Amino acid sequence: MAERFFYPGPIDGALVHLSGEEMHHMIHVCRLGIGDRVILFNGDGREYQAVIRNIRKREVELAIESVAEVSRELPLHIHVAAPLPKADRAHFLVEKLTELGVACYQPLLTSRSVIEPRPTRLEKLRRYVVEACKQCGRNRLMEIAPPVTFEQLLIYSRQVEGKLLADPEGKTLREVFCPGWSRVVVAIGPEGGFTTYELRQAHDQGWHMVSLGPTVLRIETAALTMTAGLVLLCQQKFFPMALDSLDRFC
Image: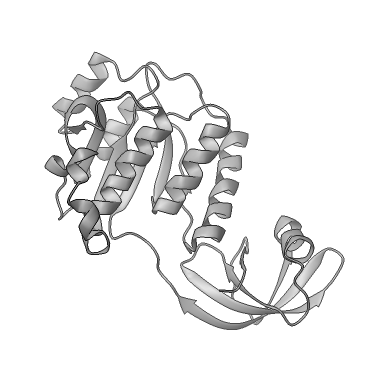
């Protein structure tokens, strides 16, 4: 498979010009040259087969040879709302959610949250999404949504079919999952967990409480465990053997 590069804008002509970090990676890291073929993507769901035509000091000129609609998205729209973990754990969370096929990650502000992400931090997370998409082959970028309070999340999710909240006292994911769902919102609590009041609010609005096992999980571990379970359940044809033991984990 040809090297993949992100083009930050619409691709609607025969020639495009790539600059900045992607140009540096293409020429100085991957050491590609004139005549080499690459794949460009810009988040619109397509892959653009291109060939390097010219290399200048600050940009690369590429000729678009073909365009293909290539979807590697899940049949289930997964929206994960979770407090932003500290330091490199946030990078890990965003990278793996992208690889698993999550449609949107939204930092969640709860009563016990510690970190309120700034715009510069969110922009950094979006760059992690691009890098993960380059590696895993997704042609649509996972959205990094603005932070939301728990109360705002409850309002947003009122019309959503599947509402799942991680809670040690809940049922297994397989018990509550409905194969007919097309959209799911997942809520993960902070390190100290959701408050009793928050849990009662969610329960009153029809959220399903989901237990992720007997141990206490960190934010990123809980988010990825819930997501991986949903991926298994909504794509059963790819994981027939794994589903036999799914109840042990979710």
